[in-house]
Amino acid sequence: MRIGLVSDTHLSGAAAKLPDELVRGLQGVELILHAGDWTHERAVSLLERIAPVDGVAGNNDGPELARRFGRKRLLELGGCRIGIVHGDIGWGRWTEQKALSSFEEERPDLILFGHSHTPYRKQHGPSLLFNPGSPLQKRRQPRYSFGLLDIEGGRLRAEHVYYDDRS
Image (cartoon, rainbow, N blue to C red; front, side, top):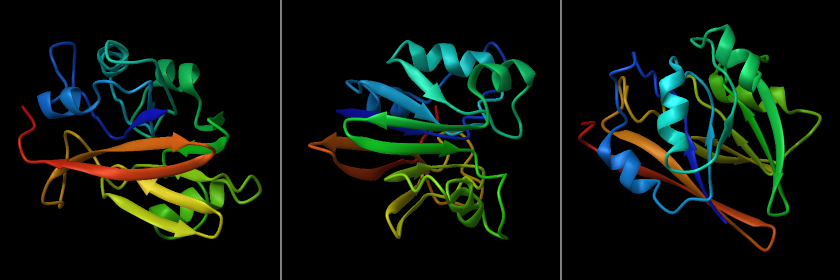
């Protein structure tokens, strides 16, 4: 099973579009998981043109997106438990600490988070923490990014996909 991992699209308005590199890179995925800060319902509909979508709302999402997705999710996919949180709630100084603390009891195989726009991939005990970065707002990062997750036989492998042009 191949899953697209996205966060912090920060799509601005009905005329906004997803980057071509992101759309191409997500072709063929069975599901897209989004870790919040969609900022516009259009981000959901554009991603749903590619594959079914699930995820959470972030701190920049309005009440409609918060009602639809909630702020924390725990899914079971392909024999793996996947936690999703934006990364702005929980305890700790750093975003990854907040994401990890949000699933302290559940201890999923993968914790997908965003908020910082900084790509991150590191094993913390039983949980792989993964921040896909942002496909539209790289902030201080050299490149835009998203992630791909492969699950096979109850094992997972997550990787970043980087690109330079957000058009």
